[in-house]
Image 1 (cartoon, one colour):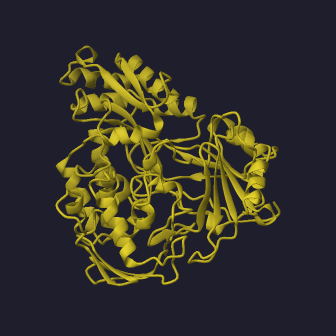
Image 2: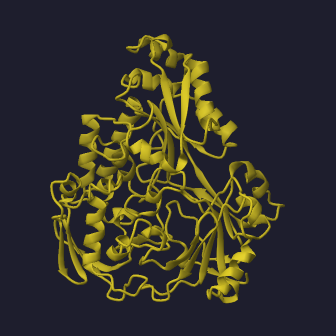
Image 3: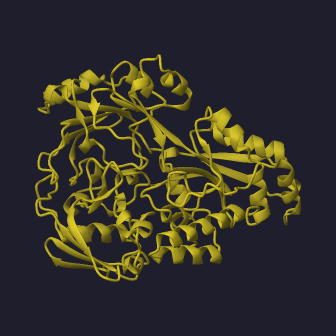
Length: 536
């Protein structure tokens, strides 16, 4: 998944409000006036924000989990994270694991009724790999397909590993047998788009012709987004007729408590009240681990973080437990390494770099910079508005100042364009990072984030020993050996400290009792088609 995008979970938590927004009741009335009549007011309502960056709405360029209501791919995850057929009803894999033959559903259509064909898959993937689109995710999620690298490099216009057998059959050749290949196709980069829709104009994404369970029927900028179920959805129409996302409607917890929305995330500062067994919200709370790791990235090509001792010093000057207790009300787990606890490959015995201010000062003195006085000006890049400093960055800066005698300069980038700038290399020596799994395989963390050739390796870290381990793990069929390779890789990452691992988060979500079929999943999936409303 994606990094912790500024619009990540936009339908879950909203921390600010704007005046002049219509009420939820007005939205339902407006739907009826437009001929969109929710059956028995069976509308699932969220509150959310809205990005002003068009790239956030294009599956091929988004840094978020994508719009899984409107779009879909060949495969998907169910609520138990089993890989299931989606647009593809079935597939075959050849004996050596390098050729996949996908059989598309003949009843799958775009929202305008046009059948989805193998040519649509080829168009969508070749578009994503087109260097003119400048996708930050195409190499990561499609790069195992033979010929994708050549298209991305501008050396070819067609992906050589794609071959249309017939209208509903596609052959895909990958560059090596990789056990996680199918999992990558659940990510938005691999979603299927309609060429005519994409080429209809620069704001095509505002009237998308998708293949998913819902159609986007209204998007009033900064007010609401309304989705209507697609009656001809190939897996059967979902139970909930209408989904409404109220944009900038107010604080999610308040809206939930007065009954204006049906699902909301719970900020850490509200947790004690919500978890109180005597309170009215206790029985509506879902909680569990997710597959996220937060960290701070050091650009190892920029002084002073080109010196491993400086990176180690900054890591050992950070007090994780104090950070969690003070900023996060004790509601996160300290991250010793890259893998979150629920991820295969998590090593409970891993020894991370400890909080040790004395050793941190010693390492800084031993570095090629000779101590704090020899360091250049250090710029920390964060997502934010104006000169406001986030509490997390302020805490880091204070610890580094107190424990190392180092002053940090902080710059904010406009949140909706933050990751565009990060991927373009327009950042200081340190910047805010984080990763939530897109699929439950350790490759999605270790390889995707730290291999020297990875698109997501924004800190420019390179270690030949690590690359070798990750490349062996890619094609290792024995699960135990694969896990061992990844755990070895994690130990290298801890010692080399290309990032400062901070926390593993937990998820807390309130769901109204009349919302049935909800499952709290550690990976973002399309839950709405599994849910229904009863007695709203």
